[in-house]
Amino acid sequence: MKKIFKKSIAIVAALSLAMTGCGISHKEAFGDTSLSSSTPVTDSDKVTFDWYINYSWFNTKWGDNAVSKAITDRTGVDINFIAPQGNEEEKLNSLIAAGTLPDLITLGWWEPQVNEMIQGDMVYALNELADQYDAYFYEVSDPQARSWYTQADGNIYGYPCSSVTPGDVSNNDNIGSNQTFLVRKDIYEAIGSPDMTTIEGFEKAVKKAAEMFPEVDGKPLIPIGAHIFDDTGNVSFDLYLQNFLAIPYEKDGQLYDRDTDPEYIEWLKMFRRLGEQGYLSTDLFIDQRVQMEEKIEEGRYFCMMYQYTDMSAQQKALYAKNPDSIYIAVDGPKNKNGDDHVLPTNTVSGWTITMVSKNCKNPDRAIKFIDYMLSEEGQKMVYLGVEGVTYDVIDGKEVVKPEVQKLLNTDRTAYDALYGADDAYWMFQDNVMQLKWKQKSDSPTQQLEDWTYPYATYTGVYDIILPADTEDAYTNARIEKLWSDTLQSLLLAKSDEEFDQILEKFIADRNALGYKQLQEKRYQYVENAKEKLGLK
Image (tube, rainbow, N blue to C red; front, side):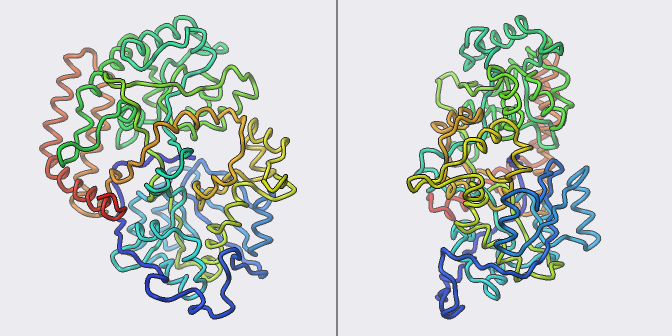
């Protein structure tokens, strides 16, 4: 799963609207025929939905594996997934421009097309569909998520997956983060399992790894890996590194300028030095996700500041080939005080949202299908699969079959094609609900997840939300693009003096674009978010 949240984004107002809050109960709305919370609305009549997933990497099919077959049998809904072959933004924009949006649309909550579709009256209000066809929506959806996504007109147009509230984080000790510092296990142990939390220790470890293991299976070792560079920067070298260093989000009643924090700058200068000495591969600056996945599966990176869920399939492939060649999570860069990392959990915004297009000829079935997927039965199906096929109930507890678990741990592609559980269909996943069925796992990704638990922190109030198509959003986009160009230049600078000059120019150019004024406005959004979530 890819959950890289960009730093600015689409509008999400917070006027709470729930049917129960209006004094209308489920029974009053639907009479004695309304369903209990344990009984999702289903239909025997078949209907097929075209469902657009705004990720070119999504390729899971519907209809062949156990889970999708069972959901179709239960709901009468068949799915035809559509994913872009190339640029996601171009594909989605063309669908919008042509008025050919499929029945369902799943995209990142931050994408500007979210607001465009709402303002263009291209999508249904889910609450209105629920009021008309299936009030069960109000039982299976989260009130805080509904409130968060309710627009100024009182309607909610999209529902999130992977939504987590501050209360969820404080009440559970096994909610983690996706952000990890990873090292290749056998190489790390061969160089003595060094402390990489300090600048000195990090530099020495990288150089020793490259010296002892210049090649991996005949191909050059890549000493440091990271996510891709895009128009907002590089999350590994900005957000993730800042979170590892526990750099604060705010100080003295205002947003803190994390990008120029002195300790952060010291670490960037360390990476610059490594680059000057040949330890930052040119691949780092040009590879896209497909190329990175190939190199991860080959085990060519020594260390990575990376989102572990983005490499889980490659981790399992490495494990199947050689269990010692997998990646493990260890403590990464820390500040001089040695403070714990501050790693963000999912937030109430979640990852993606799913909307129902007004091109949908069966919106009644769409809301019922969504409600099924949000229900406990639906979540159990999406996560555990089909009883007797993927799991058994032993002494009252669900236990995944050993052969199913083995395939999940070794070949995710084959697992999805045969079974399709473990959130292969993640579009409405509720990670917190699914904790009740969590299995004891020997998965090669389990250590990566477990490592994050002590550091996981709710930081969602700092996911700044700016209304799209406004001067503020335009200014923010220009500043992000300036930072993206600057970050690459800083890492490629030929000396610390050149680094300082580049940074000084960035600060001046950023201020000229209106950075200080924008920060003040952004902080207002932070304060509003705290109020929405009851954190003030």
